[in-house]
Image (cartoon, rainbow, N blue to C red):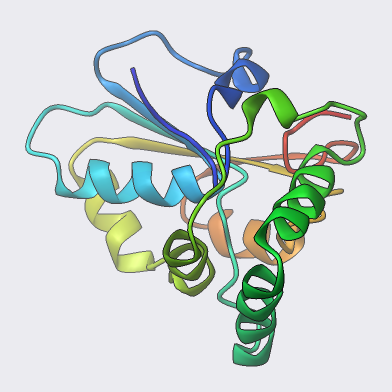
Length: 170
């Protein structure tokens, strides 16, 4: 399985072990990594049977001012920004993500904030026979999980965990 890490993280796939599939034909990603995994699967010429999107970074319902503010906060102090990001990603659990820290760049942050999920791309991927599964936590402090659920539910198999946050942990 090919796995794509979330923004400013490495090795966090352990949190998704209950849902990961050990297969050469599966692709998975978390948050920003979900965007990368999806685009990889879409562009790949190799066989991909399943794409697993864990808490996909979903900001297309946010105003442009939100994105500008996030980038300004990152510029003002990327260490403080990432520390708060890790705390919000772990919520509502008390998981310490410091051991998984791999500080991302402003370009990566801008890419994940401005990414647009596209219904046509989802349809194209599924038309090839690829199953797309989306996993969301209702208590997510990073994305608007309800808006993400409303977008993905009609388009892909979507799991919504009421007591979980961005890491899908309670």
